[in-house]
Image 1 (cartoon, rainbow, N blue to C red):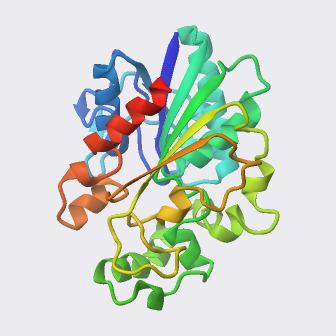
Image 2 (cartoon, one colour):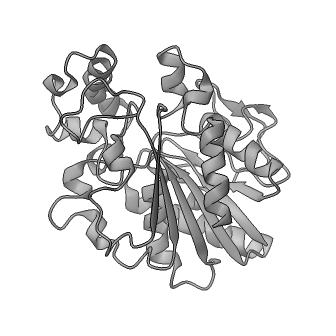
Image 3 (cartoon, rainbow, N blue to C red):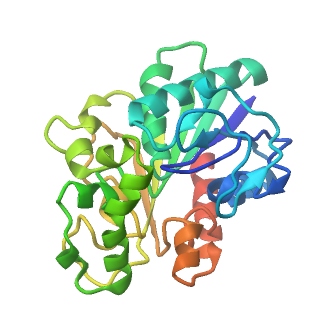
Length: 301
């Protein structure tokens, strides 16, 4: 079987889903991946969603904003992503999950559609999976708002983005001001690793991933809803959490990312941000029909 695996991002709570079953109450694949999953199922793909939660453990439900319950199966903690933890730990859990899918559903090929830090988690998993015959080979990776070279949150914490860089844009100021509080409350290692210094700095994490994407076609889709200024490019334009420059991997070398296609849409990062700023959900990267068309094209390539 050829499967499409959906991988959600930082601080996401996401149920395990199969082509036949999702969460029976609430959003079937959580507030990140429900619309993408529904679209890909309608297009005839066999779609699975990787389980994720904030902190170690398993996923039975999400009692938070736009949550879910009554999941198809509660997979072990070893194959459940801690979406607030380190990239390496998340990658290890995702690798274990992909090995489980390969064996249980007799997969012979995998494509991944990843949102936000899910793209980094996937890259970390590839470092283990590409030489492991227990995991079906990955052919295509589509990243939606992935912070290839840093995020607003990580760069605020590192001191590389400052309030004055917001150029008095009220939404951007609010996002930057709340970054430290959010990191203190939620992060278990992720916030410090989603910075330019960690990912793209000298001897950064990106360079340690050379070779992992050599045989994989990568499509990068970034959001640019917030565009009140153009400097610094590490911030402007951005989707509320990730600058377009980072989502487009502009600073990632061909040695790390040799096969890339880049797209821009004027979206925000998530439906949470869409809700917060009075936008319809289809202006979020994982709920926008225009993005679905781009994903369809990437999976056909």
